[in-house]
Length: 271
Ligand code: GDP
Ligand code: K
Ligand code: MG
Picture (cartoon, rainbow, N blue to C red):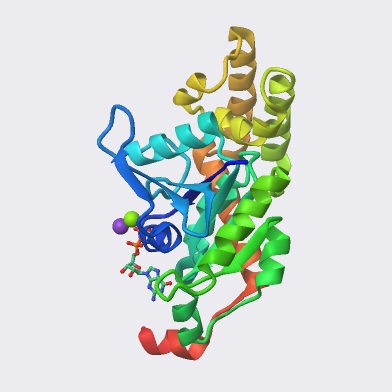
């Protein structure tokens, strides 16, 4: 059985370093169709049945950059068997912002916390079990530079792919926002693969224009969604995208406070 794993993460999170470790010389480099964004694919050194698809470095699944459009089109249309999400653990809050979005896609996700050599050197502590519990997915600590645990991370992603169980979207949103997202989800039920609804409902709430390429929505549903979003914006006195971003960061602050302990001394010294 051949398995496809997508490697996703922020720019400079160590994707290329990890990709090279995992695939060695078994790589094919080209461009994504129609755009000059590099496309790299390779097979796992230890198992030719496992293909690793390197995705462009991205900060979110919003369609603001060509990289983000390419990465999310791949994730939504090609639907890899699993996502290996590489996270720069020295910059964990910002990196996990993307993670929360990847978890909404309805695809099995494994998080590889990278740069653990630097985290350890700084004396910071990450409670991996706790983080894994809070995110609802497997978390593996690695150092792509040193090659520590990199194969383990790929193996975990392959296992998640074989198990085929989509990671559930975490409960990020609350209050009126959650109610609005639930109402949009109800409109989507039966019209699209149920697993993709958490991602699609957030994107429709954000008035993501490109989402029309991903799902067909009737004009009356379109109008209903606009009414829902408008009401939520009025009440929050903020625009839809900012509302979503704010609740995502609130959630991230909470899970980080429960799972990451920074070494105050080392951080004071660097200021
Ligand atoms: P990409 O932009 O995601 O492809 O990131 P790169 O693989 O190019 O890595 C960005 C920088 O981080 C490079 O200088 C790497 O050598 C460095 N790097 C990657 N992984 C690690 C790691 O585990 N530990 C340390 N200390 N540096 C790393
Ligand atoms: K880079
Ligand atoms: Mg790179």
